[in-house]
View (tube, rainbow, N blue to C red):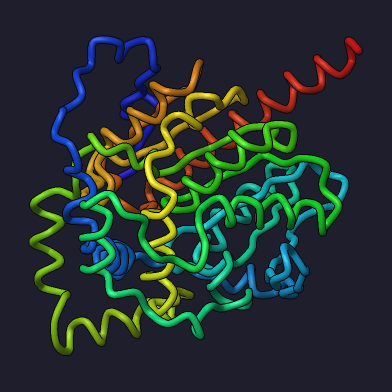
Amino acid sequence: MKLGRDDLLIIVKKTMSRHRWPQNGNSMRKPLFLLLLLTLASFANAEFASDYIVEHPLKIALVNNIEIAYREIGKPENPKVLMIMGLGASNRVHGDNMVRGIEQAGFQVLIYDNRDTGGSTRFDSWGQPTIWWQLLKDQLGFTVNAPYTLDDMSADAVGLLDAVGYEDAHIIGFSMGGMIAQQVAAQYPQRVRSLTSVMSTTFAKHLPPPTKEARERLTNFASGEAAKQLSQAMRDRGFYPESMPRQLMAIFKTGDRSDEVKTIAVKTLVIHGEDDGLIPPTHGEHTAELIESAELVIFPGMGHNVPEDILPSMLERMISHMKTADFAVGTTESHH
């Protein structure tokens, strides 16, 4: 099934002024120990190739006293795009079609492995957190244990821009990568030409948890041979399951970022899937509502991944968003 423009549910923030948010305390946090396997399950059947990506050499930059592995794809003279992946995902998970589509639209693409993932510095010596205990601490108001936070990971992103000599870049983040991208836009606005936050969240406490259907799917994956097969399938696709508990705790340790997100002033596009059971679309709506003039696009038929039939429409939206931002920046610069 191919989607045209008329098939999209495009929701601009001003149309959502009457939305009433559920006031149910920590509803998002209570079941989030499920996030690990739900994330794996969401991508288990996602088909993508990374042959084109791996043709480009994996380089290493020293950033914030750790090593960050990255690839540059595209012509150096083109505007820059920094893409940030999600929980436990290496740079390969972006997929050839996504990366090549942005490159061929006239951008140089910078993709990398977050700390604790892929070729970047790993924190295996820190061990694995006991998730149920850390979540109990969070419920009781105590700080969870984690070797780093999302603020550290956003500093890595900006440090990588410094290391490769980029003055600024369009920032695109997926899932946890969207959270990092939001932090970059809030904390380092001068380095951000535009923000695109895809299937992500502010981690506000009032937002809804994964859907009942998503939790039921988890039950089928969470034990025995199925879990082992799922883990191996994810490794084959460029995921690092052993990093996921630590990165999940980084999300919890950072907590609700709504106050920071509402300070974002750069041109912002928020993309979400109507069928996302892991991070329901209410999360995307909330993000867009906090950011002045943000545009929200919800794709029917999209869950917590990017189906191949939706990718062309998504690329069209993202590329148009970035080129509009570039035009605005160029117009502003010409007046100075």
